[in-house]
Amino acid sequence: LDTSMSPMCNQLAISRLARVQAVSHGHPTTSGLPKHIVDYWISWGAAEIPGAGEHYTEQLAVLPANTMHQWYESRVTEEGASTEDGQPFYHLTRADFEELGMPADKRWYLCMQKPFKRHPEFEDLLAKVQEEDEEAHLILHDADGTESRDLVRKRLKKAGVDMSRVTMLGAVAHHRLLAMYMLSDVTLDSFPMGGCTTTREALEVGGLVVTLPRRYLGSRWSMAYYNILGVTDLVATDPDDYLKIAIRVAKNPEVRSELRERIAARLDRLYRRPEAVQAWETLLRKIANTNTHCDGSPGGRHSAYKQQRHRKKEEKEEPADDDEEEEEEPVRLFSRHFEQMKQQQQQQTRQIHEDSDDDDEGDDDDDDDDDDDDDDD
Image (cartoon, rainbow, N blue to C red; front, side, top):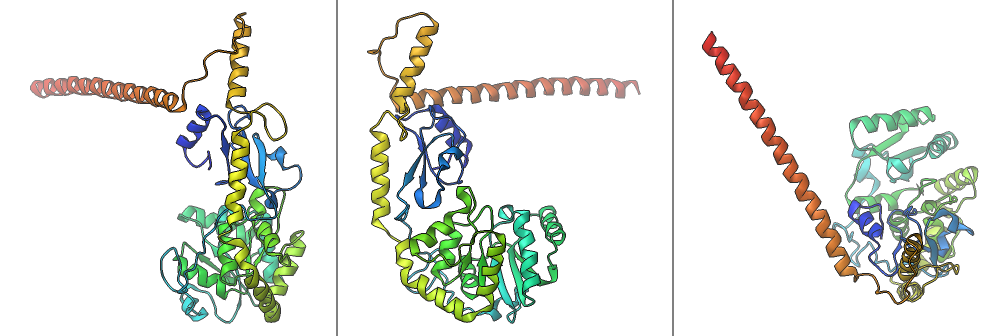
């Protein structure tokens, strides 16, 4: 799914082992590899802007905008427990969170996106929330490590945030996180990098997520879910609109109740959608059975490979042979590549041992010299 998740994934992509190679969102950004190595970046039409192909080095291929892009399972069991830790949460109240510094009598503005998603522009907006709502209490995800936590607090203070009206939390048990979404007056989607799974989880338990879609995919998941639901009241057009929506929702129980009812009535549109599976099957069959990209440009493993071989033969002034044998089978090619990596590792290990032996011999010589000095004494 994502070449940036691990070095091995990146090496596999660069090795060009498949007839057609495609990546999709683990991290919602291009692999950076050219089209002749990775043919396609598969995205969701509902979350992309017109002209989004410019954001990717691969050819952009999109799943239909009018249906869900993946098969999602509910994060809540029929018994009302978290699917992640098996614990119930509907019985929890605000009083269960007071020991964490979350005052039950204040309005909760919740953002449990990790700090690296909180842009300074978003932190400026947090200060404005406190200015506009005297009863506002911010609940934010804290950073890991003392140094990072100190930096986060300095940034918030610099933005004008009153830290006495903020609760900073580390990772919490999943059932308690769901309860926090359920009990908060409003949930704030960070920008310009927003939520995806977190948004679905909040919506499922009655959380109301205000979101501001920007230019790139990482900020547009929440908006896409709202478009599928047909409820776009919480999608802002700019930071000022975002602030206005957040304050209005937090201060008005009637508004919250009406929004929750509308979302709950359509929530099944997000889960277990067979059309999402069909959309993937259709798209994968299309890109697997073509030697051209979606825009008509040359593509596919054989196309890129033959172009490369022709260039090499022209450089050597040799006639190109269209009937030349195809590349090695992917499994054989990977085996050969893996064996080469293994040999390199073994060579490095041998070198380390040889260097270590040399150091030991030098230490022995030094010990002998020390013994001689002792004899002289």
